[in-house]
Image (cartoon, rainbow, N blue to C red; front, side, top):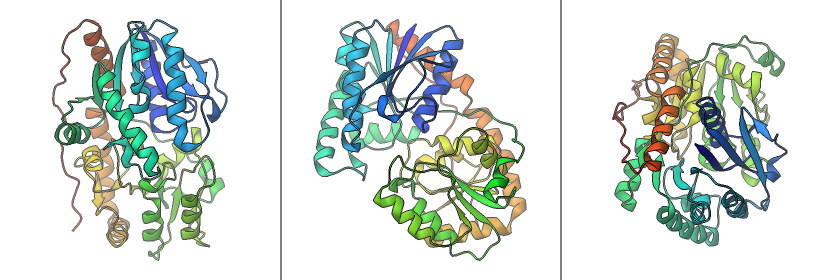
Length: 385
């Protein structure tokens, strides 16, 4: 098959969707398919080929409210100039223009990564919300099939929008620990820090984590492994919350060996997000055998199942209390570490997910219905008493 992904930021070093595309696309190449990825040019130069995938850079406006819309249009135009079997679109704006590649006979897959309609994103103004709501309606009318990365999302769209989504989660591979080396340069020691890795945007909730951590009188550090592309009001707020507390460490965007080490040697991975589809950061942390403490939103509870801990969403007092309890109960943390890695192995392996995606594509091309066996029911996190 000739497959195109539309549209990502920088395929060589982006966030969740970029990592998802890189992992899935490279595996589809290994399975004998031809894969093209459309990327946003202003997020940096990219090679023409990456892990066997052809990379096509498209122009877009740098303004946050226009980025996704402008690159979606240009990617749709470029993809319509070629003959693809499948165009896999990662959000509503690209799929709103699916009619262009469909003119060349492409089958279009809409994949939703975030929970709730995109106009709920608090970073956008009222006018932009209205535009995106229109794009969402167009997208849902243009796609041949709709998919979502969590059962939480599937339930939301079914009950709130009357739209059926096929469930195919994102994934992670169980990984060995990477020997500590780079973390020492940050003044860190194994099992002496709490880790968080995500974009520094309001809905990821890093402000709750910093506020909770600073209430604890502990010989432990907090590592915030993420940043923003530009200086923002929220970024300034986060650094102000950290103040002069030298226990709070900001390494910026962490990738490569440093990121592997940070996941390998943290005591607890904390994820205080207000909204998620299915967090790749949580799955990545679990793949290293880490104890995760997550906000109790449905998507996060779905991710950890019975192999992690939770706190009340947006509740700094509860988050501080849960952190304190975990620091005082090392044996409970170590027991969850084992269960976390096994959960990834059983339910979220990349081999299984890539096979499901391939099956989905073939079912669309052959005009056959696609169904997935329900193996991973929603389950609750471990309670802290």
